Length: 122
Image (cartoon, rainbow, N blue to C red; front, side):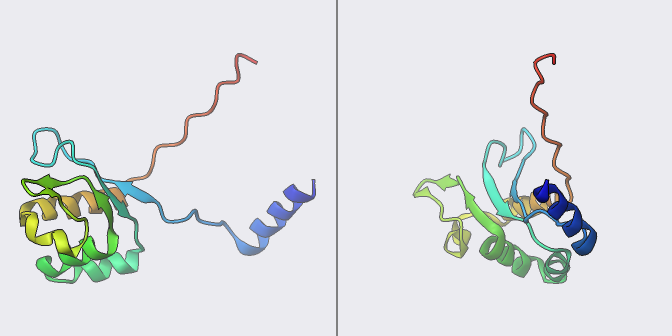
């Protein structure tokens, strides 16, 4: 009971506690060059997103890869492409732009609610 009382008091005093920033797995439309690729990115705040949006496109794409891409499974004829600034010279700008666009969409997408466990008919 003390646990629940603590939660009630905390929510009344401190307000609603937001969850931690999430990891966004980018999705690409079927039939596009990146269909099937897996790119995981960090989320960000609105203030950081505004700052990135004010940058020239080449600078914002570089900032996106350096600060927000966690990893990707991209490869070329030389093998796996590093998912940091050292891999930028091996990825076409159109692909980087598509990734950044998917990230922007992912930032504004609300995650689906978790499916409740079955009560087994009880």
